[in-house]
Image (cartoon, rainbow, N blue to C red; front, side, top):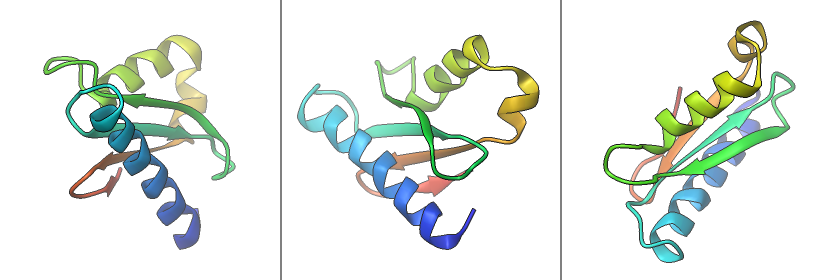
Length: 87
C-alpha cells in the first residue's frame, strides 16, 4: 500500500470516528478494513459501546464474512479524533 493510500484510509477511519461522536453520541473511535488491492474499503465500524470497540467488532464481523487467507492480505486502519493508527 502506498503512503498516499495509507493516509487516505487513516482519514476515512478518522471520519468514521467523527461520525461516531457527532452523529451517534459514541466514543470517537473508528475502524475500516481495506481489501488486498489497497483501494477497496470492505467495511467500516465505529465504537458500539465501552466493551464493543470498533476494531474488535470489525474483526469479528470480518471473520464471519471472509476467509482467514483473504483477511491475512487485508489491512485494518483505526482512527480516533485525536490520533490515527495503521495496523
